[in-house]
Image (tube, rainbow, N blue to C red; front, top):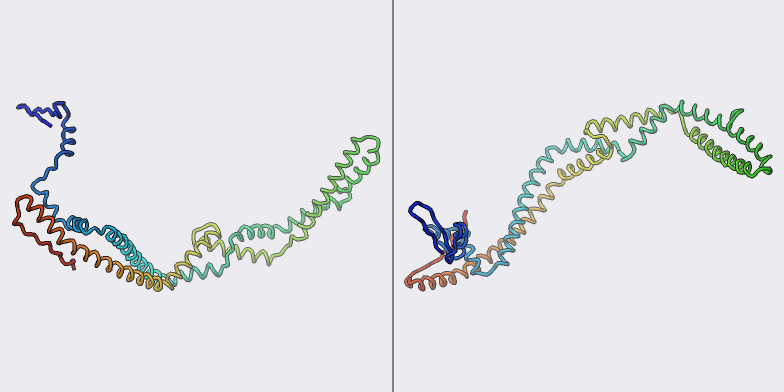
Length: 310
């Protein structure tokens, strides 16, 4: 590797006498040479680096990984505990409000699809007189009037029946009229059934109207448009009430779990500490041996474990 710098500041770089750019020379140099600057040894003062060295010599990576994993879970549980306590305190403060809203919705005894049925029923009740009048009129035209459709069709059928023996095409038409008569009789029967079950009932109309008004008021209060959304809010309020009433139990359960996790972590930490202490003499021995190879055979080294931070 060679770099030539001329008096005017220009430079050229070579590898095995082949010209290369400065970037290539730098990249190759970094792979071939470790450069130790004046302050590179300061890394040894970093506690994380010191632990890395000790743990490498102690050869307890599985134990360390187990501790780190469980410690992360422990910190997560602590965070969840703080969140539960905050939510529990707020839930208790808002309990009366949540309970009132829940009781109001529960008292309504809402059913998912009842709004559509009630609106249809109210529309029928409010227009029952017109509905009955038109149903009766249609029935009269089909079968009760002097010139009822069924009567006319029957007479037409009789007329065709009297001549169908002379022409096969007429026989087919006679059969089609008979089919129409059967269909119209069925239609007339359904019209009659609907008319019989259509009532002018002001009391029921008022009852349905009151029920719908209650539903509309709840929807307006909670700013929703459907009963399904109201039922969802009711379920959420129920959860909040239950959390406020029984939140202490959940907190106590989590606290016990955290205590058990902490005890397990302390056992693992103790074992880590024991392993690290056992590794210290080996580290001291290896470093002193290296120093002796470097001509510093009279060097002395003592590694002390610092007490944990308060």
